[in-house]
Amino acid sequence: MTRTPLADVACSIARATDLFGDAWTALIMRDVLAGVTRFDDLVHDLGISRKVLAARLARLVEEDVLVRERYRERPAREHYRATEKGKDLFPVLLALMNWGDRWCAGQAGPPATVRHLDCGRDTTAVPACAHCGEPLTIDNTTQLPGPGGRIGPGTRVLGPLIAARRPG
Amino acid sequence: MTRTPLADVACSIARATDLFGDAWTALIMRDVLAGVTRFDDLVHDLGISRKVLAARLARLVEEDVLVRERYRERPAREHYRATEKGKDLFPVLLALMNWGDRWCAGQAGPPATVRHLDCGRDTTAVPACAHCGEPLTIDNTTQLPGPGGRIGPGTRVLGPLIAARRPG
DNA sequence: GTGTTAAGTTCCCCGAGGAAACTCAAAGCG
DNA sequence: CGCTTTGAGTTTCCTCGGGGAACTTAACAC
Image (tube, rainbow over all chains, first blue to last red; front, side, top):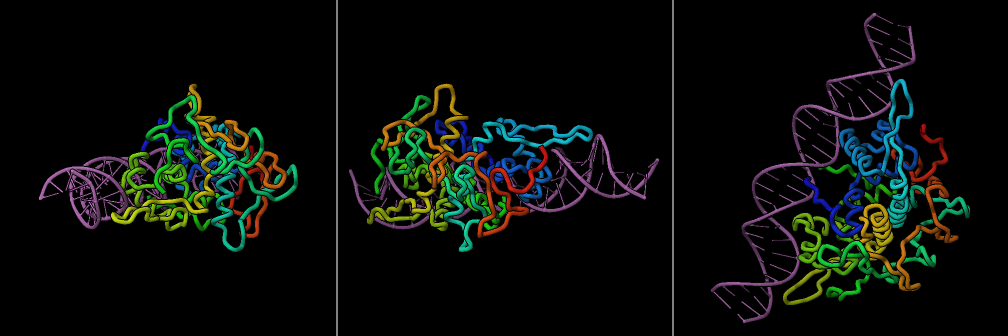
């Protein structure tokens, strides 16, 4: 495929996408975070080819998203666990799941629901402002250039721009 | 590539990933939501090949995530705008951006920041419970089978399962 | 009528993904 | 002891989708 390298673009979405923008990686992380951590279990659960799974796991370990751990000696058995960096993908998966629930579920409804143990109710996740707790939407947010880069060609950011919008 | 069809799996993450689990789709949606809506602008901004962009846009239109609109007659000019379904991908992009900011930004810091216009502060998004507003984490949530499917092989869900966990 | 802009198509090549067979090491079994 | 099973990957072969660049069509602009 000769994937275009996106990791060096000055955009955090591009950087995240360079790793996560792959059909299998999201599902692997879903499984690992849900407790499916062994190679063969992942193969059977996902229906992924062994070659591709091995490549993805190696990449995820290299990127410090997963760690390969020996969970039994004699015979040596390895599995994969999420690091802090990996566990921090939970909000992304939750957002994907919410979107799929809302737009891809059949009339039967979503295949699974999320229950918030603290309040005891089946719920969905809304992105909230870390400061005031109010919901963040595409209309009540804007992007500004941060310390790590400037906005320009190839540096598109999300939401209404300060600069003039394109026609439409 | 012969992508494995994921849309029919009883998992909303898989369904969302079938569309969104592609390196370019996330970036196309970022651009379109940011106001970069024309074919050539997308080509230049993303560095994507014209062939692949045409294919992605056709798919996104087919899936009702984007609409192709004529924004000028004589000469006829088309561009792409996000539907409600497309705009609803904003939380996913926000989550991806947050993750990239946190884990992929260099020492210079994130390339862009999100400002919440309602409270006026640069912020990050936390997934909050739609009912009580408290943060949702991997540890304070659980998944239950929903009306649209049952939990079983190929139906992994996210977070601590009710059923017994795998070893480790 | 020559050039330019916009929005794609078409062409060829190569590398990534799928499927299935193969490897290697250590148990478990009779 | 030899046979089979389990776990975790490799290897091989084939196909298809992505990259890049050239080509197309249509309407202005000069």
